[in-house]
Image (cartoon, rainbow, N blue to C red; front, side, top):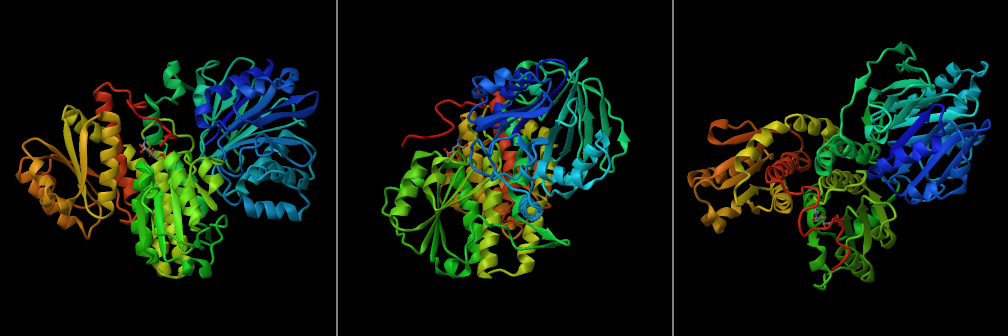
Length: 618
Ligand code: AGP
């Protein structure tokens, strides 16, 4: 998740680009850069840190170009550094590119280009793009022309597996920029004698409210007075202009009322970007999961006698899902521990223990302390985080990343689903090395993982059903969440979300545990939310739900099973998937439920009372 901006017009481009980037810092803020065309040459100004740093760089002051591209980065490949910042250019400094998304097959493209003599200076996937464009451009013997430029961009993008929104400029064509997109947003704002480009409308809403929305596999050549659109075969296409009427607050949140709702809606993209490169395919067949960044061997993993997953809050709930997956697929015992407990209870760990630390921010004090403790006992440590270069990654032996982009709302949503998805890939990777599960089982699970994003989109499209339930129950003071197996893990997360942002007291129980005490609290009108996604356990949970209905409970059921809807007050049907990863789907209605309840109560959804996004104190 990064932000991109572009300008083609008659004014000095750099202030417009920097102003646009500042509006996009919620998409990424570890480095920023701009490229303009100055006196027939590409000029690139970039650095690590916030966008405001660009203002104080003398090169920005000198830049007079009226065509430019710009980028604010949230690191996915390579640490935040000047070398890894965008724009990137090819070896001959002919093409400059900014990119939002992930080129999953960048390693192969890099190797191919190296074999043709290209040299790489960064760790990014993006640096392959200008070089591949240059490769195709020079392969074509035609004279320089905009058409030849477009063809080179088209040929390069056809080689990419993954997602991209790109802007390309070249000193050979000082009056235009070429843009393309697949699975990453890109809009073009239309002005008079000037046109704008951005990954998100807010970046350029101050200049125009007339937008063209580029679709997947579409291209555009943009000059100050023309915008020509093309499909993947480079046929000219027509697009309708859209008028966007957003106020400035909505614009900051990309049209959503709150960051939390924006982030809930970003989950399909976050999951896609986190796992697609981990699940490679060749000739329509799955290959082994791609974890070159870990490189564990069978010899090493066979020696691991137990795994600890250590985290706090929502990240710990993601760990609970991983326990079920790893134990089922790899047959290694897994203990999930709360970091603040683990660090003080003399845990039994040794060099035969693998300790996995899950943290969205990578800065949670208890998690970092637990990590240091594990290291002091010689355990192998693996960090799973959303922030490249964060403290846990600097301490851990190994780090792998979710690519959820910055999460700003205090209540974690997209980080959780991305963590569960990445942990599922990790469990498959371990099982493939250890040969503890058959290929068919693992391939089916991979297939289910790859379909999660579209299934979340389906759930999101029915958000109004959850809102209706929220409208009925928002004044309640206590609620219960129940489920068994993976559904219990989700119940815990649903209950935490509700507490955090709606200030309603709630409890999560394993459904079978109710009769051992908590059922005494069930009385007329109390809300019980049942999660039923595991067909083997569903009949048991149905009986437990019946027990609370008999005692007067008002029920909301989140399920992928065929249930008789007459028994329950509301049923939210979600798409079916493997029960190991069903939390990624079943949590979405629960996130939305908390969200709508909080909105109904006029609470500050993004900044709930007493809570901080990153808990850097004990
Ligand atoms: C989630 O909604 C919470 N705000 C909180 O539980 C959070 O997950 C926890 O503090 C851990 O944060 P981390 O993932 O950044 O380590």
